[in-house]
Length: 117
Image 1 (cartoon, helix red, strand yellow):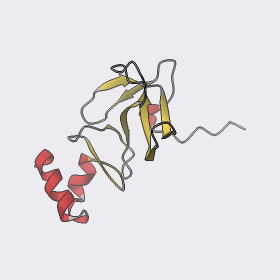
Image 2: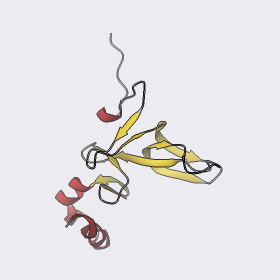
Image 3: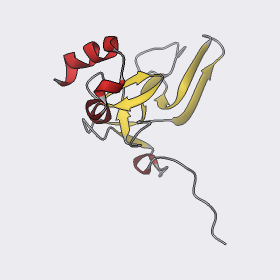
């Protein structure tokens, strides 16, 4: 019987070089890990699985550089740019936010309108 594949987003499947590509802006980065990040040194505990890597701009590498995540509605891989996704209890891509904007609180709707309308 064939082994079950891990439940990872299709575009994030591991290869020899791990590559993250935002499905909306097409920005591509090499990433080191995908998962729920917990940094004991900084008391950082994320509420979602993210793609991340060591921060190439810091020589101390205290906190990793978080690149993106997976939309909780459509499972698209999206970066954390405010034009591509939003974290509000879960990660949402801007396409799903546009389709479901009335389901978000007024404050979130106003913030999102700056970027998508």
